[in-house]
Length: 170
Image 1: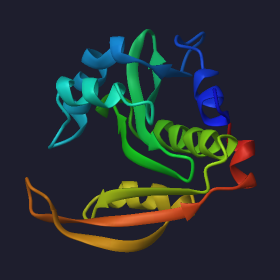
Image 2: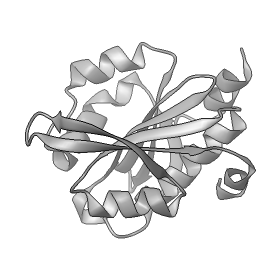
Image 3: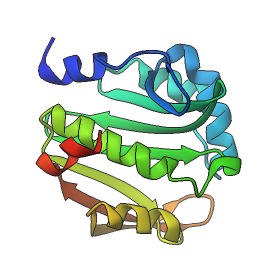
């Protein structure tokens, strides 16, 4: 088991308190997919999550409140790059800092894993997400023209180096 595997494996599979951060697994696919459908116009289907969970470079971490999944972050991680795929917060729990907490925690995990850079894509029109990412030091480094099939909207590509600053966020 390398450093990356050890860090990811070190997270408990079940929360122990309110708003506890924990790693989700294939057994949570239905719940993750249901939250995904509430949050995104082009949600992943359960089958897509199943295929992703079969890859050791895919992880999902979540927050539960009263036993209900209220937010999650899905990522791909390689030795050099952490790609934030989605951060989803249940509509009834938005504006409470959950996405900020998840992003801070996942960047801290990436740093502990020795990953050098984080990247993500975001819809050009998603001003709240852009503000969140820029608040964490992400800088726009590209555009994927007409990326989103449902609206033909551009995806903005953001990146940032990982480092010691994230250690204090976890």
